[in-house]
Amino acid sequence: MNKRVSSPKTMQDVIRRHQFTLKKSLGQNFLIDENILNNIASAADIEEESYVLEIGPGAGALTQVLASRAKKVLAVEIDHRLEVVLKDTLHHFENVSVRFGDVLKLDLHQLISEEFPPDVAVTVVANLPYYVTTPILMKLLTDVLPINTIVVMIQKEVASRLQAVPGEKSYGSLSIAVQYIAEAKIVMTVPKTVFVPQPNVDSAVIRLDVRPEKKVQVADEAFFFKLVRASFAQRRKTLMNNLINNLYDKDQKEYLLTVLEKVGIDPSRRGETLSIEEFARLSDALGSK
Image 1 (tube, rainbow, N blue to C red):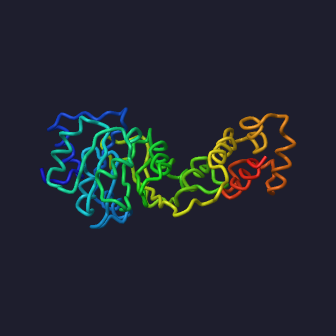
Image 2 (tube, rainbow, N blue to C red; image 1 turned 180 degrees about the vertical axis):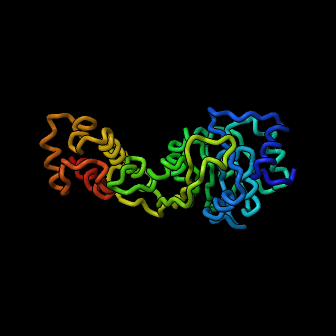
Image 3 (cartoon, helix red, strand yellow; image 1 turned 30 degrees about the horizontal axis):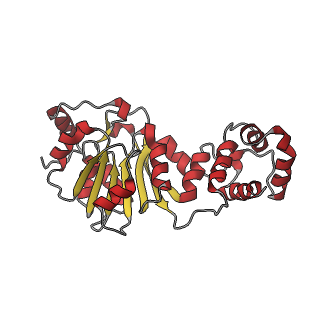
């Protein structure tokens, strides 16, 4: 088969020919819009020297577009039932390698070293299932992989959280975790009507550019993230109340007040108003006890 599977008819033909049934539990919503697929590849700056890691190729619609532009595409798919489908839709692309397994359990360092030349910068492109968006993104960002850019289609609401700034309703611990490591920017929104089957919500494509250095420097990274999570535990509560309820004991209130005053943060503020720089200052001050 040499047809692009980005049209509704071709996609339906492929699914019918292989008697494939889409699993809701795997978040299988296949994209069927050629323009959007091309825009995703363009947003990731995929060109003839690019090495691409695609997560969740599905029936191969986005894979075909990536392979037509890139040096090589490594596609990781969790659903072994798609093996026969991908052999059909990708057989004429010699620069595509498909590996089956759960990306959250795979050793991506080993996989990348097996499939790509040493010292190349890898671009990740994916249409991520909504239910595993956060763990996959955090694995990609924290495993210290040779990745420079991540362009992913995710739930629109989650994309808003990734690029949110202090004071916005969607700003939270995920915003800080991602922005600590990467610069986030939504590049397009995608209506639910261009998927088979249609999901319940609209999507967005977000680009994450991994920073050469972390956005802030902290003495204890683990404590920094622990502090951030505690500060957002109950959004309507003040920073002081969240820290007392989730990180410290009540008898340490005076100590907390002293430290907050020292770093110039009002204890009556809410966590959602603090910048990543303020969290870094507070983390270092509290960690130096």
